[in-house]
Image 1 (cartoon, rainbow, N blue to C red):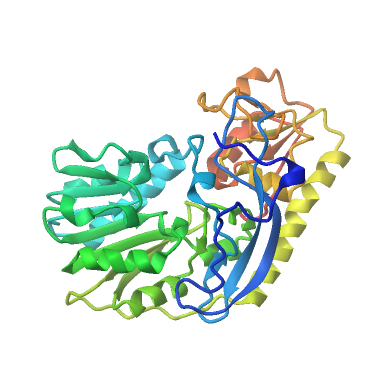
Image 2: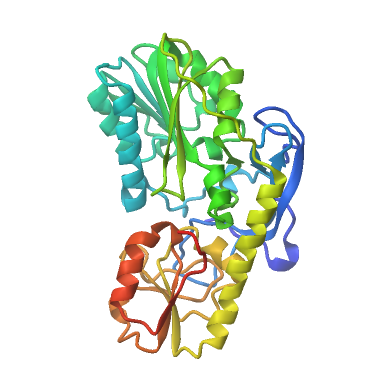
Length: 405
């Protein structure tokens, strides 16, 4: 695991962080809308709380021209995704359910069609790609987690270990790609427009493209600014993403939101060529006024949590849900110092800590009772199933740091 700089030595950027300076979708000018000094990294669990929390100054920028959201600073990949970075699709019930919804969207779009060559960019642990292979003859997955393991994993399914820009997909394809899928990858890319251009070059004339990203509109409407973090370099709205696709010659087919995943993910389907036509949706460019209004609401909600905990007279306070994103939520609501533990029934996380926080992750059954306790929802993206579990434990109170879940 990489070592964080001591607090006194922290710099605004990692040494080779990028500062794009302009919108990477349309080249428009950027304005700062959300300053995030000393924002922690996420997705890390460690056996020793003495491991320092890594923090870097950050800010959310907005493109004046197309309304795209973009981070002010791009940290290097080795800082963001070291060996401790935890996300694997199959290990997350939320990600599994989200991939199932995306698969159904793709299958409906391709009804009656057999794909010759499927390509998934950001295939992670192959959960989605194995399902997609039922729709076609061959599938290729590209993801850094397969680095050093290029080759055929199962009959008809190959992987390339690396980023799209570091690999040569054409050499591993049986035919030009006629189904190209990418789920929750474009928001991590330094150059999403360049990635789209490269995928267009791999595509057959009748290729179907489906891209899923967290929806910027839904983040703002839901006041979920805890979802602004270092790993997500880009914040796509339907307007900004479709504008980029059209600038490269893509044609809109359909879009859908999955409101049960990440607050409302955006699935966009389009073609480079082909004969199908669909009327593009109305364009609604994100504005600084809407962002700043949402940020003010978010801050009021999250900053109330420490006062609620201090004034409640609780015997103990527990967080419920050891979410990968909890360090950012904790950053906005004043830390975890008041918490006795974070409760989570995933055995892979029990006994671990978040870097820099001396608050253990423990199983729910390890606590004798909750009669005088407060439970704080610390995994808001899994709020619906977790709320029923929290209520069953009959705590004195449970506290929701955010209002719209």
